[in-house]
Image (cartoon, rainbow over all chains, first blue to last red):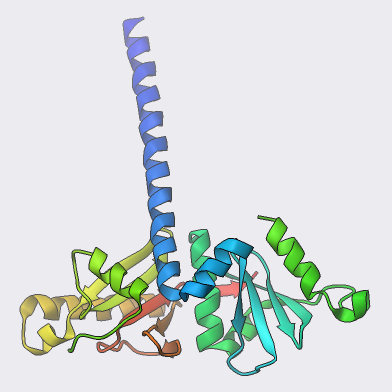
Length: 148
Length: 104
């Protein structure tokens, strides 16, 4: 009886320690990812990201084009001439904290836009050209802000 | 290597790490741990400092290893556009390596 109790107590302690370690590892990774994000974004972009839930990254090749990158992992909106042209889906093969997704999108768009466009899966939303004369930018902004 | 000016966020980050200062190069590898960081001092390595040379060689080794895994490297410097790097540059202020990406 005593041995059984001891085993259960030890198991309980083991589970608690594992959960604590997992939580510590996770929060440390998130903290470091946020530091990296802070280092990569400008102050204005950083504020915008946390206020509105996304940042807009201008295309280096086309002044009429920009990319709307959400704070949480998800699709990136490709917006050209004020209109939503496509949703882009691109993700790292390795598991990374959420904040790193923004870093990856920003670096790739700014430094190697063509590769970014080649690698990303492109989803053209149904009704882009029919609904509201194709102007879905404000609608997408609404959903992006309120989904977080 | 001369001391370089930097945005406040980059500078404070460098200063917050006891391992290095603002005159050192920084390699950051995006990973599940947030990012792994490695500092090197090119000036020290050029001067023949064994520790600095070892750090530089380690940074080059990790850079090459990550590249073979499909990672992409970017040079991120204050007030300069982000640039994709094909090879390790010891003079870079900060190199960020992101893991291989695929269409989702």
